[in-house]
Length: 184
Image (tube, rainbow, N blue to C red; front, top):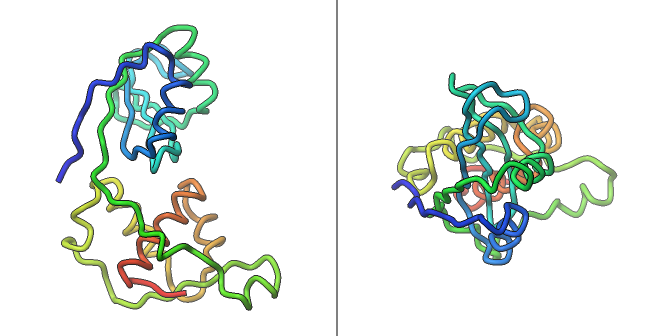
């Protein structure tokens, strides 16, 4: 099921708008068409991925479909100077991970030093029906992290092997724990 698109009035500025999303813990994608910005020629689409109001990814997709990472603060500044842009919010129907499943490192790991836990796969693969509530991109991220869980890599090593933000990997680990696809 795809998320719903909502026109979003960011005429008060991106910085203020992001505070509102954080306050209301919104999840989804905020995007706007931009021109000649941050080393990207021509038109592009600025994208901000939000999970419970927190920005987990910030990038621009150029006219060739290539993704360019961009600093959130710089995007805020450009929005102030050249905008405000016409932002569209695509809500994410993904439910938040229940608070009953917070991520916590095992006690032995906490006492033994800076090493993070080593997750173990509990199932051979994830089935599409398990992931249907997430967007295709989120499904891809979940599959990626699941494939990196091999019983030898720690969570910190998994984070180091992806370009995903650390908090995004943590959220995916929580999701995999809730799905009982992995165990710590």
